[in-house]
Image (cartoon, rainbow, N blue to C red):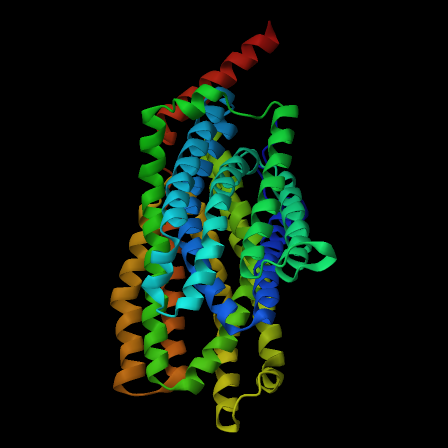
Length: 466
């Protein structure tokens, strides 16, 4: 059985989380490659890709919410040592992710033209988008199964297999993009649909790799747990996953509202926010491993019935992640005078861009905390609190402050982004107090599971003494 990292040791934790960070980086590379190669074909193709990927994003959000829920439950069971129930939950997670991907794939396959027509009326772009979506709809199924399969490994603390799978997927995606989009080396020139076929081939190959590893290492759930999932497990995954789903969709809605206020401030404000957006992705990459690694480790420790160690682990993960975030923030601030020149902003916008980047650097430790703390809290099966915190912070802090800074007092991008930063800091404080309370450790772990764990320990000790 995989050894649980009960005590936070920075070097060991970084080794554990580094594949996660690289995995996120590779996913970004896939997206950049698709956009770059399709963009070469012309704006119509690029528009078709953008429309299609917006639906794919919605699909991924659905899968992430419920696979994350399955991972939380499975992580606790793995820490507890209950391998049978662990694989049952993994099987149910596979069932749910496969069902979602099948339903969504069928909708996209048969409704590809309608889906595109909802967003745009241009006949040529609708045609290109429909060609892409009909192929990517098939890819949805394999993507859903892949995400469900990855829960088996990550919940055990095995971050290497999902990383290797992502390496295979990324490399093949880049290669087949080059071959199928442009028709190089005798391959058919498929244009934007070539990007979809590339995704299908690479995703299927990566899935086959994970399946082979799972079979060879005896980590594949039983067929019965997948095709005849226990209703109690389905209910628990839905109970934990729905608030995660709500949190993600609400966050996206909040970002759209903020973008609306920024748009009202003028095109230069939008351009500056676009520059900031590029750094959002880079900064998240630096802490993505901390976020996922904290969630996995804390869930396993809680499952082992060691709530006090879960708290200590979470504290140390938080402080080190904030330290890393602070270092990244300082670097951004130091280079802030050089950044506007790269993006050729107008002269009057340069000063505002620099100030906004400095604010971004100052807020980074708090943004990092807002990744790590909710991950730890969700690991205790408390997924409602992060959702309600995000909702209340937006309604009571973010929305009124950005409205005052934007439409009312017209303080431009600096004022609006400052208001957004105040909301970010407020959330980190609320999350910290929730984490410190220990009330987030739920799921009957404090009583029933604790007693079961102690009974298992006593049994092991009796066996050893005899």
